[in-house]
Image 1 (cartoon, rainbow, N blue to C red):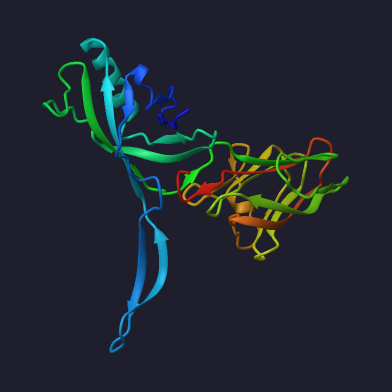
Image 2 (cartoon, rainbow, N blue to C red; image 1 turned 90 degrees about the horizontal axis):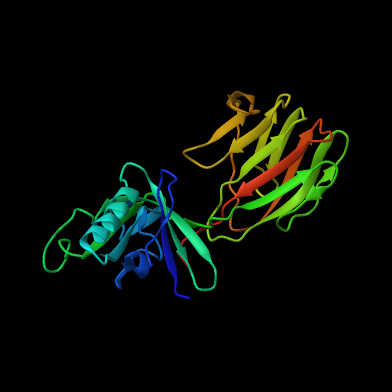
Amino acid sequence: MARELRWYPGDGSDPLVLTDPAAGYKVLKGSTGWGAAPVEHVTESTPLVDGEEILETYETGRTILLPMLITGRTYEAFQERLGALVDAMDPRVPGQLEIAQPNGQRRRIAAVYAEGLEGAEDKDSGGDTTWHKAVIRLYCPDPAFFDPTPVRLMFGYPAPVSFFPLFPLRLSADAVLGAATIINPGDLPAWPQWTATAPGTGAQFDNEDTGEELHVSGTLTDTLTIVTRPGIQAVTMGSADWWDRLVDVPQLWALPKGQTNVTVALTGAAPGSSVMVEFRPRYRKAW
């Protein structure tokens, strides 16, 4: 089995397999953008001193180029397939590009169509018969690839259930409380989403390695959800905003690559209470 590329439109419609010649789509040789992302260095120079000092380094958005051949047995079939690709890559609605390797590994990246499907018709591009060659450019503002299957760790009353290696948390009539070790198998920090299900009267999620603390006060009447990912950070109780229930200065901490020791507590726990953390491992490359 060769590797497979799929495009998941941002509107939730069915994905397109971009490497299925039988369906009229083929990715040609020459694609780029699968390895390390572009890097920028913030530097500072000192008068009368040779060179510069690097103050900070960060990865910028990446561009993926996909040379493609779109075909159809008839002109009408070709037009339908080309039109379906254009519709799926709406530049106003970011989608996701997935690459599946022969060994079963899958990684995705959020992307938005930038150019390549303008409809050129010439001897090199075709477009006016039953085939068309195009170089599609996708822009990825977040350069990280991620695992489409999230890692989930759940703990309920009265015994924990683990979907990933984790030291058991102790549940009592008062609290879900314990020390745990979470393993992030990715290359980059991952942003966890925490949920706590009623009943409960407060929750805390502490990173024992860094000392960062994330505490919420208040009686849980629904599901408490804390999203830590930059740009979409949120704290909600059901559909209600609970940002003001964060205690002191909140630290919506990330899970670094490798092992993180944490302490989790849900005070006032009772039958039906549960705590869960979910995250998607992130990678610097597509393989």
